[in-house]
Length: 369
Image (cartoon, rainbow, N blue to C red; front, side):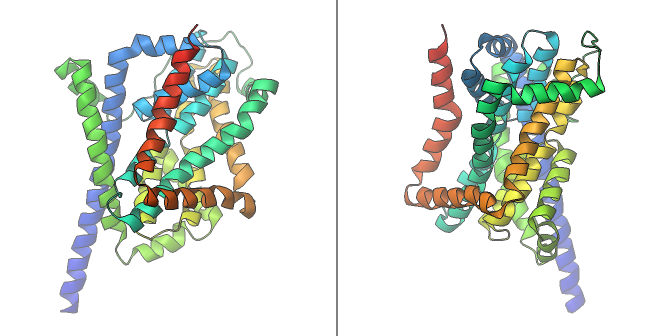
């Protein structure tokens, strides 16, 4: 009898992990299809937006809005690297956009948390976890943007580091675009449909479907007893969680995937909000590998921008991770927002619309001369 139970448990575990893997692949595929659809739909518009402004604060919101729409900071950052490499955008203009992209990418984990809105207790924890990623990036921007605007802190530091790797500014190698492994399939689907707007609608539907499947599959995979051991290993201490977050995100090349995995774990009380925060900080650093790959453009400015992306997240980690008091500030704020969102559940939707779409759009619209 016991052997049958063990065998059944083993089969269930295999099914759960397989479901999570398939959900993860669907999520990456859906994001990539959306990326291809958006690039086919408004490639010229995107280039014009990137080159339109010299105002660092508007640049910040352009990066935020583009990432919120495309749902991939990796894609936006790689695109910005390409424009900088072509010489149409200066490094100083691009830095605030990269900062904005870091805020925009936090939308996904917040959307995942909204899927728990029907259960008060789960929604409270999930929304707090989703907000953690937002708060960390917003705080880092508040600290580093003024230093960049008034002193050129990140751009000057990154140029100094970039000069170690490449000393000849005039050198320009072959442009190599970083592509996700699903790209051949997504390009084939896009070409077969041949109507970019229709492809975009399909991809948006798939993104939201993938988010829902991913969140439920993660719960089923980790609700098993074996998660106790995994929990002890990954979330043993803040630094261990930070390391796992960094390497796991570098492996999948998407902080949106890893932070979205954490939300259901927090919602179902498998991981505390406090222990999830160092993992999210690590995920932010891990995602910078995409900009590094995009910097194969081999111009000093492009490499410097890839370094900016890394420095932004690394300095943010240095500010919060080593100091428990500072590390607790985003956690306390996230928990507060979680409590407020339960009292007024529409608050979550209002926050998403205002932060990621309405405010950035209005600021960009009214800034046009």
